[in-house]
Length: 310
Image (tube, rainbow, N blue to C red; front, side, top):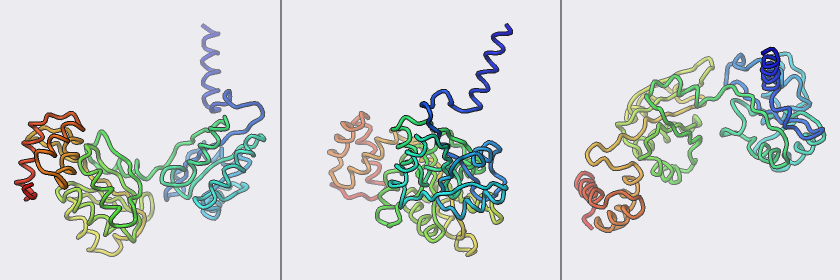
């Protein structure tokens, strides 16, 4: 019994130290460290310990990270790693880890590699057989979802939509029938246009949660119908400022025919280009849904949406 207790204690210590047994001889580690998305207090004691002990901190913006470290009284050597130099810098950092250094990877805010630089460095470190240790923490998407109040057991994190309107609409069209809450990041100068296209493409009856400046002084979380979101943003110019998380409720199941969401999506795409019967037949072959149900749904869509009678 006593020996079993010692074994459990040893296992717990090894777990706290983080994958030490996996490290190749003499090599250091790469820590992927989440940092606050606004409030500087939103950082874990473990993250602060790693940042303080690292030989080098690879930061998306050394000025931003320098401010965070100074706030917590940490003096660390910083090197820039961002979208413009990551391919070149990754090789340098992997070589340093192989030589025994411990490197902490951070982005400006939140978790590296999640709509931020860092994934390439992590991939190169793993390819080299090095130990990669995640230090979890703040994430804007999860923070927004937790305060959204949507009954969404499943969600799809998309991140930033394309900046060009045509590409953005195309991306949204591919997401329209998915049975998941959709989570987007958006910049302030595009948020009004983005919300308008969300309503036009996904349907104004769906709900949206607009989460702005999370954890910061002017944090705001607003929930409304998609077709009301544009007016809410326009009512106060301050509502268009800051960093945004947009969450759109999932597509409602088609109660009438009970078609799977993917069959509905494929059918709609085919109906835009092909005759009704051909669309139903092809949709059945592609998705495995029943041809007669697809044909009945195609008739309903043609009548409801005034589609051309092909």
